[in-house]
Length: 113
Length: 116
Image (cartoon, rainbow over all chains, first blue to last red; front, side):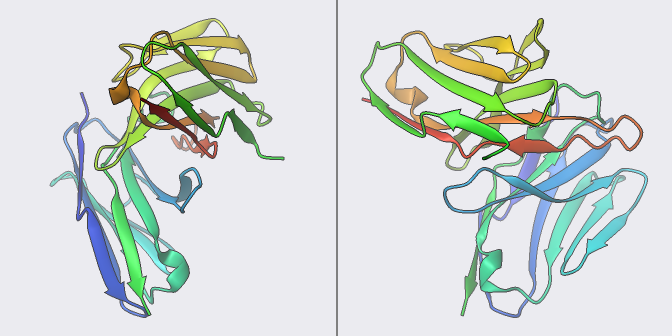
């Protein structure tokens, strides 16, 4: 079955700097890769997702890149702000009909003032 | 009101007790899921249901059971709780987009369970 590895487990960056979180997946049939943000005391919430037919997607300060050959994808946050502090999860699944969305182990991002 | 509501939000119980965590949703989604979150292990799927008559085991179903009472309700039971079931439990729903392939999960706020 699918296995998703996520690095680093913790990340601390200066406010205004960029943050990068990386994930690898094992099943080459996976074609949908969402990223979720979990704020303290809340459930995870989707922030961006990417399908396997594109290599990059941007939404304001957030971007995700996908390398299908190497089976890895990354989340990039530019101009980090205090409200970016949270736990981030990557995930992989085989499209909308997939019964399972497999999550990575999470990255705790802290933004230093 | 929240789209996905979990009760209770916090529960402390003793080894051997039966526990039920409840989930209700107002999204109108057919698909519902139960995940468990442990530090360093991410979110692991316990059970999922694609409709009222469809129940499936996830990655870590041993020691758990579920009931889909209605489209909007999906409960998780621990028949005889043990300490290593201490975790944060999340219910989620989804309405996959067949054309785009997206399957966005909407999570509840979580139920923190402590088994002593």
